[in-house]
Length: 239
Image (tube, rainbow, N blue to C red; front, side, top):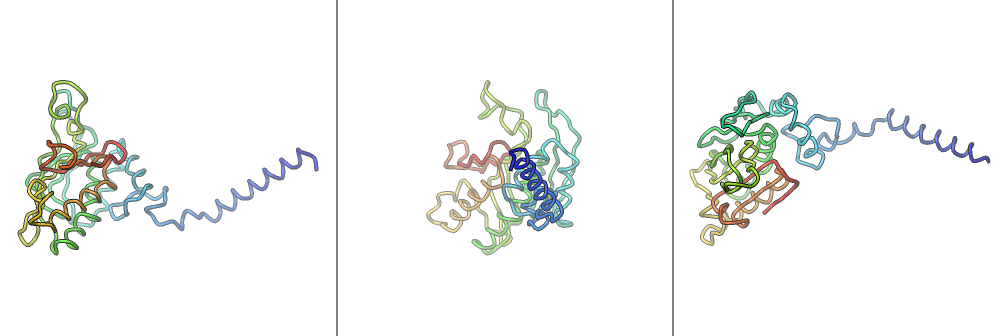
């Protein structure tokens, strides 16, 4: 058989395979969290495809807010904000203000919309289930140190900007349970007198690494001894 005929047969076979794939649409059989063509939803488990979808909404406020709208009715109280500059040199874009989720907070906080999506997914899929499984009670209140701060990392006079400067970070210090008990990152991270709380905090830290680009805690350095730092930058830096 002539080489040109062999090449033609190969191209026809590839074309037939392509048509077969298109007609059978095997991707429709994938779970939504693994289907690249399905829009992200709060209920989708976090997978590599979910994280890819999360990265796609960073520059698309309308699409990001559509994801937040998939949260169960009454489970999330938030306000989309127009782009603005609260402090000179630190403009905020694609941000939302969260007042309540499954938990209440010591104060509302403003974060980038993709970070809000990651936070709500994490809270529903990991944080609350871990509290129920390990401590026997849901979390009803979360105390944080804030999200936005127009500053460089570690408040240095020079150097790169902190993720807080764009509201792309949230510092969480304490969890309060429905039964009134409190779990403090500062008090209980290495607590030998409250080992269940220590185990809970370490499991929360580890679970968060699948949802946020960067997760820092007490084992990272002294400035983080009293809180967890969650932000949307990086690709799985977890310390």
